[in-house]
Each structure stands twice: as C-alpha cells, then as structure tokens.
Image (cartoon, rainbow, N blue to C red):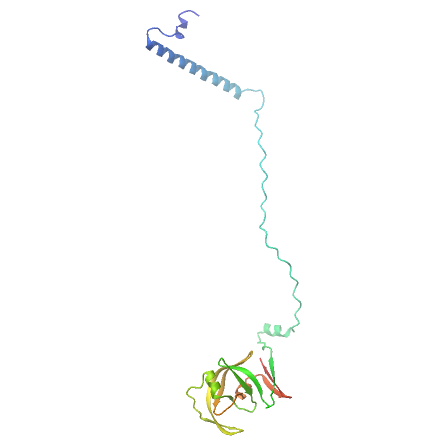
Length: 224
C-alpha cells in the first residue's frame, strides 16, 4: 500500500481541528464495519443447513389438582318408621272429604261422703273448687266465686229456685269459659246464688259434654 492510500488511516496534520475530524472518521469506519460483520454472522446462522433448530426442552406442566366436590355432612341412616296400627278408615274418610271426629277423652272423679264429686276448675281464668250436681239445672256460683270470675257487678236476682233449704234467688250471668284440665267449655249460662256455700256444676255445663255417668260413687265425664 502506498503512502497516498494510507493517508485515510493517518491523522491530518494541521492542528487540533484536523485531529478531531480524523477521529470521527475512524469511529464511523469501525462502526460500519462492525454492523456489516454482525449482519453476515446472523445470516449464516439463519440459513445454515447444518441441522434442525434445537428447541430448549420445557418442563412438563405441573399436575392440576382435580376439583373435589364439597364434602356434605354425613347423615346417618334412620330406620324406617314402624307400620301404623291406626285403622285405615280415618284416612279413607279424609280422602272422601268427611270430617273425622276427635278422639273421646274422659275424666273420672270419686264422690266424697256427702255424695258430691269435687274438682278444681277455672272460671273466666279464676281458680275455684266446684261440686258436680247432676240435679241442678244450671251452673251456680257463690257470691265470692262470682267476684273471682268478675261477674258479680250489677247482679239482678230475678230468678227463683227450689232447693233443699227452700226457695233461693239467683242472678243470671254468662261465663266466658269453664276449664277443667284439658276440658274447656265456652259461653256457659250460670246464676249467682244467694246464701250458697259452694259453687255447683249443673246441667248447663253437663249437657255440653259428650256424656257423663255416676256409678259406684265414681263420676265419669267424656268429651271430644
């Protein structure tokens, strides 16, 4: 190579300006050369027939947990109910739309030596002791029991009754209910009697029952 062709690689003489220009030319020359070399190497790798491109092995996917159904609380099996011993007739009547009467209930009371059977009753919510008298035409309250039941106000003693002690007067009243245990009779006609020692359950109560019977000193009441 002669002197003239190497002038491009040598710095120009003539001061600082010539040196800067020469350095810029050198940087540009080497930068273009590096780009050309990179392009050639890249093309050789892309179009080389040396073999199929190798794919980096991938790790197998992690096994997925299968969705599990929610665990329901365990229910212990129950034995089948025993066959009912109730006759089929009531169900048959219900299927026909007929009203089945409720079961008959009963209450038995033993009479005391005076011949009366006594019971604790609730009249209009007030508790009192009453005696059954099958010969009395009406429920009869003493004045004290009438006060408990709240029916002693404005009494009109307009009725006359024949008793073992002679004639007696009574004031008619209406009782909201008479309750003896599970037996409840609503709207009972009664009278408040003068000079009576104990309240009586007479026919205005007994006739509302399914039945009653006095035998061997035992009074039996039945109702539905």
